[in-house]
Length: 233
Image (spheres, rainbow, N blue to C red):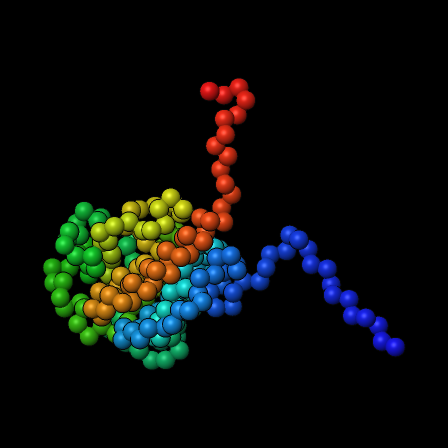
């Protein structure tokens, strides 16, 4: 006679396991059906280790959409080659970093602008895009991205771009951003790759997934009680 196996009790407050692909809780998982698209321009996402936005963060969701993308978590790497795990020339890569750039100085007709070390637009907006092999995105809050920038001096050897989007992030009021130009990692990658590769299908697919994520997040928020309370007019 064998003893019956008793399943361990599961706490009602225990959080369900996150999706192994996108890292989201089941209620926010939108990665089913996503097929990675071919991208000639390589993408490297460097995420600050204290980035905690598991619900609205988009780094892993971004990766699912691309065949040629990499994801690293940490504060610093000795070089771009160390971060990628192979020898590359940083001069053929660009980092997206707004920093203290005054967006009033950016050309109004350009959504992707090449800037110098001080964040000022370069006079030549054609040459910086020639021979470009990859893009680096710094994932985290505004202050976390700043930390990654200063902890990795080799980023100064890369070309530097800033975004001048025509419309604000789809986050809207869901996540407070310090500047209007701030976009999610997914939105930034979608804009960069679709424009640089002249392939709008990349942005269409990525923004569709982002819209689904935001819709799922809103649907799972507590409903506001708009009923008039006693004693109030």
